Image (tube, rainbow, N blue to C red; front, side, top):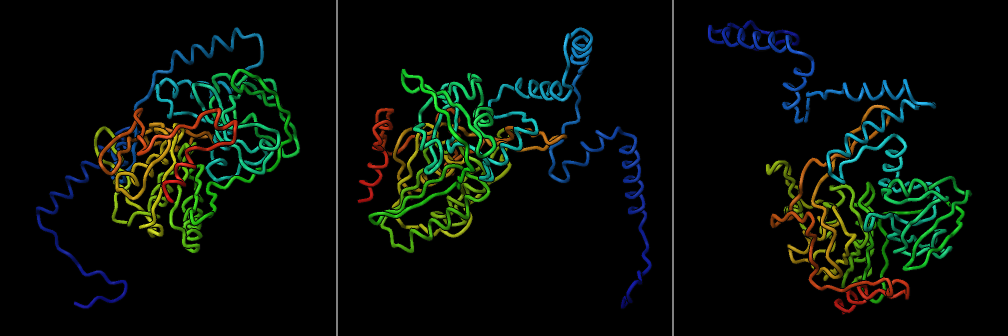
Length: 400
């Protein structure tokens, strides 16, 4: 029978079909009788969503709030109390990578991953031995001109102690409007130094590159939204200048987006090569391959790593090492083998939660173990103070 537009032929139903339809209707009726959270729990897995519908008994929290409000001699900031309760609950999970950020912290975090750091001094901050520390100085920015150096331990900003602060919290104190000043107190060895610096608009692309003596150097400071494309352009620049070798510098790179790591690994690896496997509760939830074109395939490559090379940087380092397309030089990497998901919360807050562990192509999870370089070359504070870089020297020597 030919069908005309808008015409539906009549259909007949078997008895078994009618029974099945009746059963489905009964199931729908049961579901409708559930609470809304139960409906969400039943439906969400169909769409691949994770949902937890359990509730906490917050009566103790409410009682604490009532007593605080009734007896506190002062003004209470309700939003601050709510943020504090959420922050404390997340911190109680006991995972340093599962964190709650209020709106201001979330905005700063997202700006950093997009490369938009606004006004600042041009220094990257990490946490070393529990204390915020300057891990990298950006060339041509105020921190470099003032004399601040990588390795300086950040003791205070504007007179406020940064003891036990996270890197994000310490960085938020350092940042501010361009043209304003900030006082930075650091500890360098046994000496304490104080700098008053005028903030400027900071230019901080995640990838920088250069070619000298037939060797291309690609420095990646983080894996953000632009990293894949910036790294590809750097690789094309290297091949256009017919380099004989490439140095991929991932030192002090704390990581970022996994898809950026796939794109960087894809500069050396074909798209059929596994880069990382993600597992939740020992069950594989994702297997991710290299992406893009292997522009640098076949070019001798050295990857520089150190104790601050972490997360997405370790994904790239581990894959290139295990496939034998690069030699790692430097010091053992940090050892962060977990994957975090960013979940938006009401009011602009953000939950960054550990949702999986990742494994190298050979099935290794490097949590707390890190990746051992093929050639260990230390970089001491004395080297940094003297302006020497024995790790880079070793990489150049290996490519000659």
